[in-house]
Image (tube, rainbow, N blue to C red; front, side, top):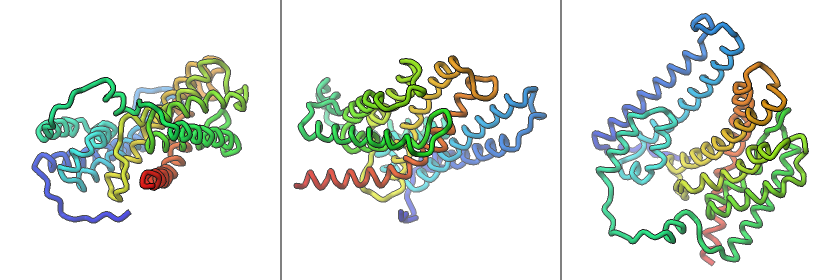
Length: 325
């Protein structure tokens, strides 16, 4: 990816946002270093295991926040006002994820001040539904959904032979086709494909991984439809090879696996820990949060994030080729 560092004219408010972005990056960096160096003697906590769990969690939170602080700071530096307004969702979400709430206020003011007055269009339920992908399915849509469902089922089956954690969780390769379908086609097709895959997967998922209806719902069904749900946010994915376009890939991947992480963490505590107790430690929440964090953020998310960009680009290229024929 080649980025041309040319001088970009910025209004004073945009410069202010850029300044706050850099400031919050330094704050997150300081907090991360502080928690990395923190010792139990600095706190009132007496239980060493509790301290280590809290420390690990805070390091993870501030490490992620630092990463997003870097992204939002670079976004402010490389973007002019037009690009900021054109990528509203990206800038708002990156500001939230980096805990940069000052910039959220600046962005809201910028969007309000520079909003474009469009000719009024009659708002209808049909128009809203079409905007979010709810439309009459064509034969092509049905075939595409069936193809991606088959692909997802295949990946789900193959995933059983790839590296996994002892109590479940691994590379999550089956999410890749669903993310691609949600971005390239419509989110509703990804939800249908994901839900269908989750139902068919019952045929080959081991009984030891599903111990109740809630276990199935939180560990399999809901995670499988989350890529489609994230697709409703309508992040702009295009063929531009600029920084802002690539950040949208990261946002899509992050929110997809954030939803999966939340669902599986809830399952870990309310289903697995409630039934068998934590495999280590005494805190069920700490066990579920940390175990699923390793499964999602250390394995599944990086693996899928790397493959997501070329996969979606290839699918979009194929889609454009079909539309030209």
